[in-house]
Length: 360
Image (tube, rainbow, N blue to C red; front, side, top):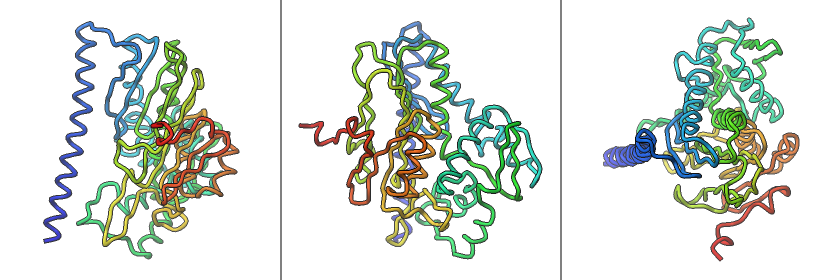
């Protein structure tokens, strides 16, 4: 009986997911149809697409219509040609499947930059972020399992898999060579890729002299330049205990702030089994989902990849241990704990507004 109910729930969830994707694609096709007919996008209008396994939205000021398609194509190509561990033919896929333990492999300029920056956070966070954690993520399979087929790995299984992880086994030199010391390792940039896409997008906006805009790739958002009317940009922060559209607060950024905002939370991907909730943010030190007392962390800094990487690392570390790391990267953060209590670092307090205050 319970299995039947579980299947019905899984089917319902799948139907909702498909419906959501169709809505995104419908909106995207409507925008594209308007462009193909010669209609111009209004200043600040938002287009929607799908890339890197998530939704992408682009809203620009002082830009040509073609700029939207250019940005969306760049994000898609970044994933498919450079940083996806899943996409056969990408630079990272090739590295994972052709490297020989202990021997240097030269990589592309783009992959080199992404790996170097990601590895900086791995090192400085003491492995709270670890780009080699994919085998452990596959063992848990929280990203794609259902309640019916999910099982908690045994301690023996976890110990065996952990032997195939460890950012310390990865060396990246100035000649764009990557050396992986152990066999059967998998490098995964999923925890930083969406933020890195913002850095690629920002470079395009600068080169093409776009006056302003916002670009979101999943849980990462770039606020760039200025709106035509000079008003501030707002980036909402999800209520971890609410529905997808519920906001616990928002961040307000003045014109020309050129800021990246990334959020990691236990509500993004999780599964419940026998009364226990298991989320996808794993702690390599324990081999289990991280238990830091937090529900989400939102990080603000000037670099997209770092904002994305730091949001994951800080979630694993918890509030107190995160502060030196944030300071090193000149970043600020909003921490939300399991009781939905919000803690904002000093440099961000004037920009954070609670949802309750906004309604008054």
